[in-house]
Length: 410
Ligand code: HEM
Image 1 (cartoon, rainbow, N blue to C red):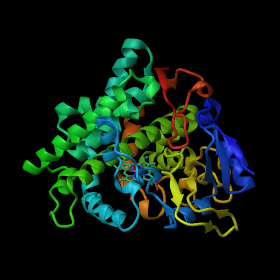
Image 2: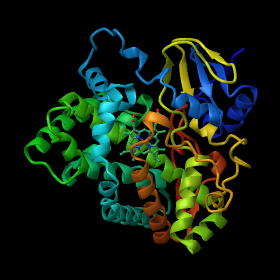
Image 3: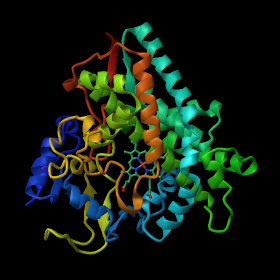
């Protein structure tokens, strides 16, 4: 038996959790039919999610890379080159790429970004305030949650200030649904990003900066990254780092605006409670709704007896695993104090699990625990300017968060 799922349905996008709960109850590893006629296996149970993510029989290498004809256009070539990053590899390639990136992404390097994140958060909160004064309403996604992580990645990659508006515009176009843009705009942005990263790498080789990306570019040749791997790494850091963090910031702001008691408590209690708000948002509105697709390299019988055939597409639905009632009591409630109380909840899987566990988790937490208090301190009377149940959410199974978050000063 399989169940029909249309990820583009706006009702599903706004609240997919009842569907995931039904599926989990029936079978935490279930075969579903997608509206485009293909089939996939969705993993919605917490234990099962962790088991799949740690099992090498579930491959990260996209099937389409095998034996594909020569790519038709420059933009398509750029897209394919940039997609050859570590999240799309298995051992042993993955281990080599990950070791090099981990050596650059040290806790000390990430923590050194703190003053710059503080400055950016303050500047962007100022922008929101100016928009509110001018227009009476502002979109927190467009004015705050989107630019902050893009600009932080600009710091990580050592993109000069003068180029950051371009980076922001290309990223926006590459990440937008094609029908939201003028024809050709996404292709042009892919080619621009590819060309820009090439120039950036050459520049860092000539004159390395103190940014994290320079240390990857200038790693010793032997065992270091080649140019294509560097291009893909720059792209992965940008894309793994911006869309997820944008959704974390937007979903946390939405949760606080709809749970004013929690906002008051965070303002009153300070850092520890802001950290709990961030953890609870990661669990309750996991910004990566699903991991990247996995493909079974052989038939797999999971412990519960479910047999997945070889070559099957498998999606671990982190957003569902993080609402598994067997591990999180009252899973649909937004209750940051579960991360403060003695109840010690199970670790959420919002940053994944196993060999591909998020490399940027520390940076994402740093950004969110700085940005949210700065935003709400700069704009004390903020209220939602639309009923929460009318807000559209990102369609699809991979990312989760509101598309827009209109606010006004109360
Ligand atoms: C991988 C979540 C922010 C860099 C992942 C994975 C998840 C995740 C679930 C594993 C995906 C899979 O197994 O298919 C998140 C969330 C974030 C966030 C929820 C923010 C709230 C960041 C940031 C960066 C980053 C800020 C860096 C700038 C990476 C990289 C990987 C990754 C490089 C690939 C690791 C590998 O393949 O070994 N992230 N991420 N992430 N993330 Fe993040």
